Length: 314
Ligand code: RIB
Ligand code: CA
View (cartoon, rainbow, N blue to C red):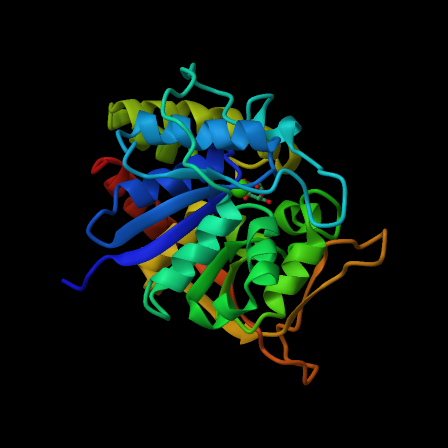
């Protein structure tokens, strides 16, 4: 078996972030988590940094360092999503405050130092929240762009539209300037937009299988998902809600579950009406550079089989 793939998870936990982090924790043979960097998004930074450590302790992974990063977007006031994730960002289960400390230093410095230390082209960035930390790292150290193996991001939407506004998906909407910088940096990017994640629903039968694993992480995640999905169930009238963030990790583990194509993706950063919209040239009607591999289709049952299998391995 090949050496585990080195990754940094940049995240704003968030119940779906929790599922992604747990999927990574359950995949030790394939993924070497160099660190978790937190960013303000679903809830303010103090809570995302708290929540990431809670997840590490819940899963017995206090070996993984957690860094605090940007507490606000590059150029706008922070917009949060307590209406979806609850006051703490991990509402659902009763969770103890973390005892593990934050790692020393700022997340952006950790990202820069890690990319400069590790051999070129060996580190993958997995972004589950607003792209503020990545944009700041690129601003501080433009040389790192060429050193990134791949950046796999949950964000954006095209034919599906938006979830925080009719036009914009939350991660991109919170920091559209950051998203625009990252997409213009020449990094190999794989994008998991709402068009894909809305096909990945936490059906009752699927959550029941997760709960049936019976472990502390699985029981906690089942409660998180049952809290998290209520907003989308009410909005879309669906059985379960879209499980966005773990698609990023699943792509690293089983890319064959996904289908998409290389496209140009631009970000609206000016219009108040469509701020944060990802304009995806899916039909290649422009000659703009194809700066992202945009995923649109997924084997959703294969995804949940993988997630459940790896939760059992934490
Ligand atoms: O739009 C969904 C994204 O916004 C997910 O990453 C969710 O955790 C929130 O951050
Ligand atoms: Ca997230």
